[in-house]
Image (cartoon, rainbow, N blue to C red; front, top):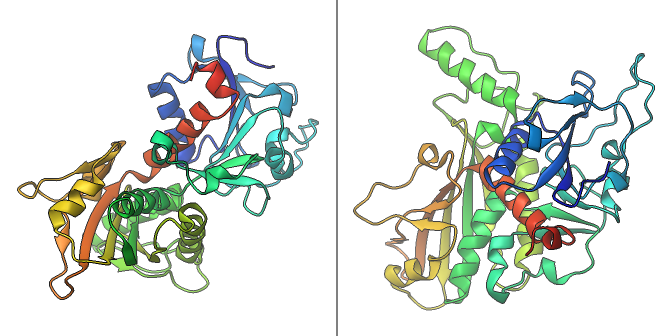
Length: 363
């Protein structure tokens, strides 16, 4: 089932997830050269894997044969991988797309993990391609060869972009980051519960709390109620961001302290970053250092960017830098980004720059 010369054979695990849907949308927007696509789900409630030929539209045909590593050029993992249950009417053996071990050690195709589907598997290399251009290869990318690639968490991408741009001009002595996560970070069940909580409160009705364990609508949570579904979600996200920052930044700049909060928004994340420089620096100089691809700075006479404004955009929107009034060397930076789009775009850029895809794309 390998793709013909004019395109690539692509697999997407978790295509029906919020992140998977965004990935498919961005693949189409960027005219990624897909000759054949297999979308796979790891849930018994989901349909069998369909094959989609993008040259003929998006109408799926049911895949009848098992798929193997040799059938793909690139595989995106957009959701955690769970073992497929044995269905009475399904005699197919487990697929290559169902096995984290096989995906993590694939030699014939490029595997890109967006959502910790291969967590715990050795050999992954973290990448943020737009920060590696111009010869500024990342600490992680200097490790070779890669068994598979890890697409950085959106908060890691935002913080790495801000810190590395500043560190190229100034010596940073400390940094503290607060990340305000949207409901879409958890999944569609969280988005649905936030919507129903909001409607319920406005109509004076009882609100559901199965996901968050308490009221999130019109509220801000540092953690979820103990014992509830997704109760460890914020801590897990926090740990993931910290580990990725430690691996990606290496010794190039200071490692920030990070705390994640659950915000009452559906999409897009926000970051409040405090930094201290070794010597006092004018805010204008800090803003100048931040300028570059994918970071859009807001002028002081313009309204500060919001999470709602960031939804649907590919750039990281950054407000004018604010001086800390109590610390001469301290400054605050506010940034927002569409979490789903940023993650999907980063993963696709990894695919576009990885070999042999880069050769097929003429890069």
